[in-house]
Length: 200
Image (cartoon, rainbow, N blue to C red; front, side, top):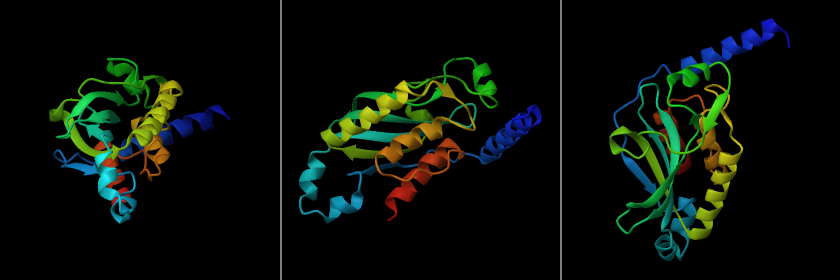
């Protein structure tokens, strides 16, 4: 690939990322909870009520506000009887730094990434959208195994090619869900993820 082609690819990639981030976030969206990975199967099954009782684990696809266009990530763990999270874990892809420099550079080239908690992830005042899916223990173990694999194999972040939406989209697809475009704003990504998978 020539130098001119590389420059053109970078310009186009940056333009796509900027264009995707031009819309504005809405106010915090309502919380949504699904009782099973496949709501149709759960409601059609004679043992649906029993199955729902056994779903004491969860994964919550979530977005939060930030100084930039936001962040997409998942929160997962066990839920108490009233839905409270018990020792939740967080997984999300973001630049491995508290500085804004790697974040800016990551709009042009891949930068080193972290795949865990970031500041504000569990603070309600920053939550912009969320969709919680209740799971039984085998389903939960399967999802956690996928998350651990992604965490071990996601060394870099890039706003265009592999961003926080792409990371969360892989988790959703591993559960049999459709994932929207990775170029949406985080709030729009999570809202669309829920809508395209629960409106059947």
